[in-house]
Image (tube, rainbow, N blue to C red):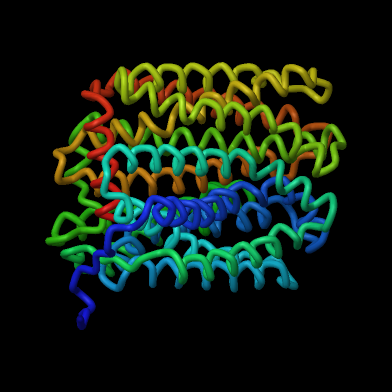
Length: 479
């Protein structure tokens, strides 16, 4: 049979072993994407010493990745629907792997930031595409629900485990190993995907929205750039004022263009629903809180307390454990009682975790630090499933895929904002003054928890597991 670029490709029914092998391969790629969002955090001081740069340049080594990832997620899913999901998945692995090698060999911070941006482009072809592959390979709703539960747990674990993994790598092999380690995993995923992953396409591919895509990237990157560089150049300086004007113009232009497109990248009219807009805001808030906490922890423990990278990464183990244990529990709660109870828990734990460290000092009890990290990890673990469910439930069923894609973009945008905001607070602080400088950052984490509580108040109850599975399946198919 001849297959055209726009014709659907559906694999034959796969054996159970083959289906779960496909899930394992896709989870491997998802683990890479999540890990690289946070693994670099704990290595930032070592990177700064190795490349002789300050905190603001280091922020860009994290945000270059997350900004590009956030900006390209939706378009990468559309490319996969048009050209084939396995093909785009393998493109993403190749780009991600080559960019990782470029990061490991980077002679300067500029080269590292550029390579991290390319790495983010590769990652954007992995996250939504791999989930679509999993859903396409598992037609049974019950099995698909189990697979998506595994998927969600792997993503949460990868984000929370990044600092621990990064600390071990930096301590044993140096900061460049943070990127070398990706190479063998990418090679294994490429081989396994070629052998086990079937090709598939969407029955009807969306038309590309190039103007919307360009404006989205400009909007996110300029706003993040303003937050990172504003304290350095001065908020009233011509450069800062010009950048703010560009950011406002890009945002307004994006909204105007998207309102006129027949198939927009992100339809602004979707945000009229309070449940959906609240869920997107909640996704931003949760990832602002997580990434701000990780960055503040890294600099405080290593600069103020004198911890090694390994010790600083190990200190986040309670955060990783809380996220890993509570993410599956949250999914089950959503299926049984709807999104509100886990959202209440998520908001409450995030708020409590931030407030625990609002009075942080140079000699704050290690027990209090670990307890606060546990609270934040538990809050993060409870948050993801109900936020996605609330976003999907806030729109008609035929818009469920769009809801999931926008929520994923909001998460990565939140990660970039969290790094920019937290970095702006502690940039230029001496080791003795860093604890005091970081206190507003912990209030920020608590405020993000309050936002999640407001999202819980706005969330509408969901009817049960079946609706959740159907909505999530639509999400994956649309991606």
